[in-house]
Length: 595
Image 1 (cartoon, rainbow, N blue to C red):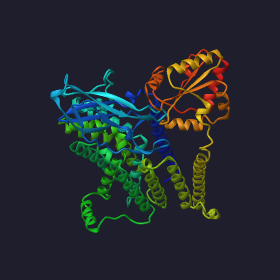
Image 2 (cartoon, rainbow, N blue to C red):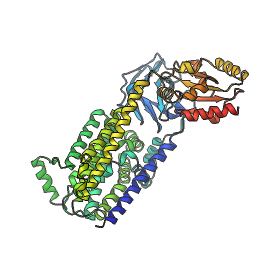
Image 3 (cartoon, helix red, strand yellow):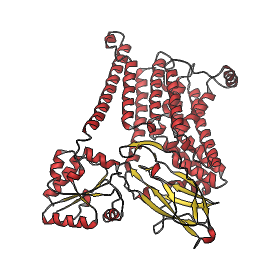
Image 4 (cartoon, helix red, strand yellow):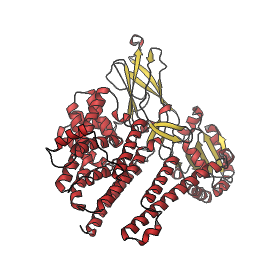
């Protein structure tokens, strides 16, 4: 095959991956709207058969701390049983340290003993405590909400004295499965699957399938590539359908199990072994007795390890459950609460087929685009072997801190560069292929060393300078009530000063980062000494703190408000979450010159 054809195909694949990245980035960008805590973390409570079912939803770009969630009741005629929260995702931050968080919807079942004979107006109230943050850097104060429990089991619990939250995405999908036209159900979930196929956590299935196709013995033609791709997608469909049924029967979210640290570690080890196998270090073979039976089964088919591909497709489906959380949970709701198991299976199968459309296209084209034979195969297998090692690191992301992750990725690039021959620059006088490989290895190795140096310097800088940062108490005057704020604004107006009001709290992770990265700018420090710089410490989250937030519609720290010399807030300059020193400095200077 001509080199130009290979380059053309490579460009096509590159464009596809770039398109996938742009879609994911766009979705992430539009998810950054700041929501009220009730909107970011909707909660619904239902009561049935002496059991409370508390459904938590979490909007994209937000997360809840597991250890900050608790349930209780001040009612004397209700006793809550032991609460067991599902496993969360490992997370590290500067204030809470190593902890667990939730980014996806989850359900908690709590046994409850209610003396209904003493209940007034056939309703009780349950207290829910939680705390969470937004990815843009905003942290909400600890929340305490009251939910009504309707003992007639006809209506869901709602917010006391508040409005009902709009129906969620999962609720709409659940209603579609239960009541919608079956053809529309299949088309809708097919489209959802196709869109979800371009999310970052589903992209690793592409090299997995490609390595399977490239690793086949003998000639790889279009028909064989297509059949292998269809088998792979069938494995995904079987897994999702089976997982939905098992989860419904067990009354749990199956996807939570796949996020357990033990499961992630096992999957990472598996990918390491697959990578070593692709590099030719050993061959992965099943026991001879089982192999003979599989060979007998495959003898009735065309050449190809279809059973193995089917199993790999099912395994890959487990690794990307985070991408299909809303449709999967919606299906589980319907399967668990009604007898529409058939509709749920059809929805999940259509979702799997939509996820598999790009994989089928890649498998179909592999037989045409890739050369049929030659030494290129060993090089490609090596590349995919290295990708397998990268996937192992990617799978372990939730279990590691950001600093550890950066160091591991840096070491990965260094080792890849050494493997490719980056230390053998004296061999560039040999064949051109060898020199290209060595040059590539050398560049990759340099990138790895640069990443490693950057990580080490960053960590060292934090450790050396953590005691050199100016205390926020020296930069700001603390106010404790709305009266203090009004008095401070009046004094600033009489002195013709502008005002910066900084909302912070000791439980606010981003506040510490803001004070370390932004308020250490010397020009900003000098300017803060010339204006009326005040801060509202919301650590206690008492009535005064809530009044300070509610007066300006503040949801949580870090938030900064800028007031002119007349004590009027400049809403167009409000800062939420992290902000660079240069941006804040520019706004303050602008307001100072044009109050």
